[in-house]
Amino acid sequence: MKFIAVLLIVAMIVPQIADPCSPDAISKVVRGLEELSQSYVNVTSAVRYADKWLKACGEGNYTEAVKVYSNVSEEVMRLSVFRDSSRLGMLLYKALTTLVFVLIPIAIYLLLPRVYLYLWYSSKKRWFVVKRK
Amino acid sequence: MVCGEEKVILDEEVFAVILALAIVASSIGIALTWRPFGERFVAIGLLDESCKIGVYPKTVALNQSLKLCIYVYNHMGKPIAYQVMYKVALNASQLPTASAPSVAKPLGKWLGALDNDRDEQFFAFVRIPWDRGLLGRNISLVFELWVFNTTTGSWMYSGVWGHIWVEVVG
Image (tube, rainbow over all chains, first blue to last red; front, side):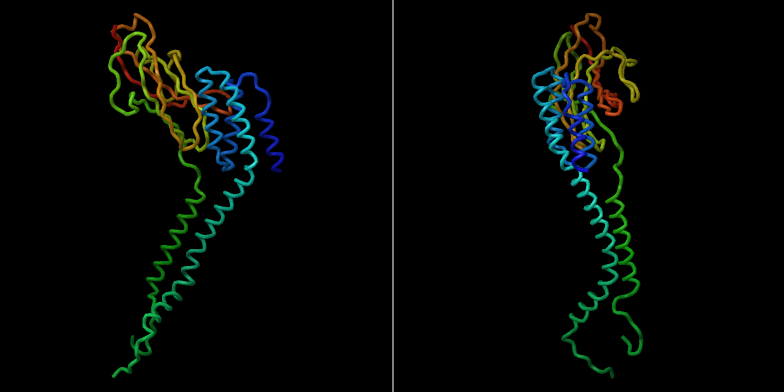
């Protein structure tokens, strides 16, 4: 499954694009970044390359754009390996957080009276019991 | 405590209130954990040459180069490719609206990419077009924010812009 996902991303990005600043090239990279981001992959490094690449396009620096475009593609391919694990990690994180939140009231219901009693008796263990007159 | 009278050391009402507070707090915590992403938007700000709000030029000369600072912010819940377009509007009717960009032709553009919840500031050097008909007139320097739409595969006007009015002098 992971292998197929990687192949799909690679197939989207790798094809040789004549103009690295064309809407087609921008579309492919931005779509790749969006998909990775939606899978909770940290795309900061890829976005940094994409920013550099688009700035080169904006300035008309074609040589730099071609160079940075390949960096963006490589970075997106590298990050696509983490797609499944990141999604699973986030799901686990949310499930565990929910479990903790569910357990808090149950823990309070079961433990609070016992803890309170323990502290109450502990604080009075040196007391003497005297019969009321 | 009176002998024979049943009394719980931890008051039942206090215990019920503590439990209720814990349930409410936990429910809020679960809701926040699974909440969907809120409002999605992008923003643009037009700042002066010190990248601050305030000291904007009032007059410009024909063909003069102005130094301004552009601020862009992304809160779309995903990375975006953006484009800031520079146009000169000759009157108020040529200003962009929330639904349509200015009809004036673009005179410059700046591209970039931003991750979600990230912003960027950059300097924009803009030139006033050489047109003697502009002398003595008030014109508006317009900066529109366009975002790349991956569904349509083209740049789309985001509905936000910044502009300043300046008087063209000789």
